Image 1 (tube, rainbow, N blue to C red):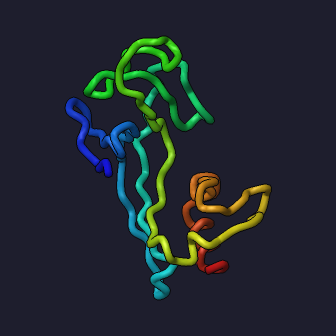
Image 2 (cartoon, rainbow, N blue to C red; image 1 turned 30 degrees about the vertical axis):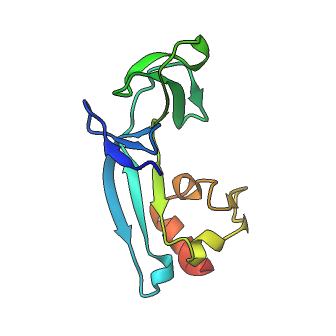
Image 3 (cartoon, rainbow, N blue to C red; image 1 turned 180 degrees about the vertical axis):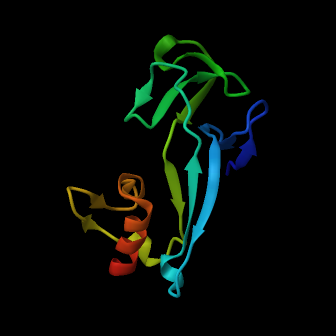
Length: 135
């Protein structure tokens, strides 16, 4: 199993050997009900270094051993496949808590499924209120 490591030349983390993120801050949100407690890792907005941008939040390219850009993904150049997150946040919860069980339409066409990134599409406090109302 691969782990989290510090990037050699930047204030960044490498996750599972190929995901590059630059953390800005880590927040913890909790209520009386521990099942709606979570950590939110907010990323430092980062400019893209290649043309391999996917969905506006991340890019994929070939990097060197320090995860610096070497070439576009389809260039045929050898190196490390890098998935660089440019903005957004990640939510960390206990895998058995109700947050992970939320499924279905929320509102305004937002779908809850644990992978849709709803926490990044609505206001921080509205997200937390949605958890209080649904968990």
